[in-house]
Length: 313
Image 1: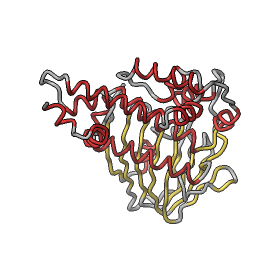
Image 2: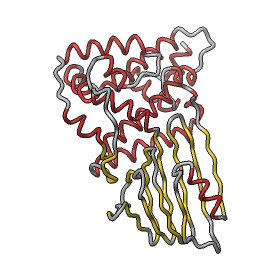
Image 3: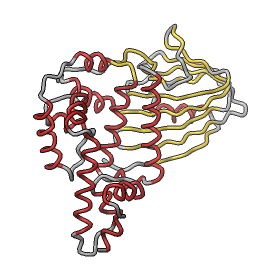
Image 4: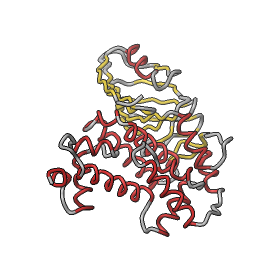
């Protein structure tokens, strides 16, 4: 199911706040929360296979939580302290919530979480690892590196921007699938799970030219479909890492860049052959460009004119 929905609420009673959090942490328990002057805020966006929530507590308290889903949290606060078992959870950067045993205390705090569908991320990881029996298991809470953490934050910010500026774009399977795949792959690269070892241990033995040929054939045959880089890699019988290497070596561009140019070419052909009923926004959305202004910018760089100029000719 496509589309996104957003809600925002301010709550002044503890029980309602706990119910709000239960959507992401089913076993959460709030304790020793100061009830006098209690105030909490929640702004939630629910998309296909993911959700995002900004939340804040303006009263001191404690909590225990965990989640079977994949939840990444960025948080800060006054008197704010988190632990997982006996280990301190570093909150100066985003962290992966454990399945159980997360405990916290605070005077006040605000946080942003991103929840990803575990089964869907595992499916992508299984394909990337080349192992149909692969299971995605959390092996830590901290990001793999500061660089990967920054990339994760950038991807989240980009997806969040689309949900705010053009929420209807998620009605397109191309955009919805692409957004989730972008989040899932950023997550797999950023956080400590069993996928990291599986990906490192896989050796690529496919000739680059054959890989590129198979991938290009798949791209051309399915450019109008909501295909992802992972699906292209699957069609070429290689991992996403191997596909990226083959494309940059043989074509001097990444698979995503090549697919983007192919879709720009298809969009240009549609604009040029329009019978007068097409719109720039409609064509952009049909070819996977969620933001019309960014589509226009990319189009101008590629063809030296705006899509509107092409449509008028």
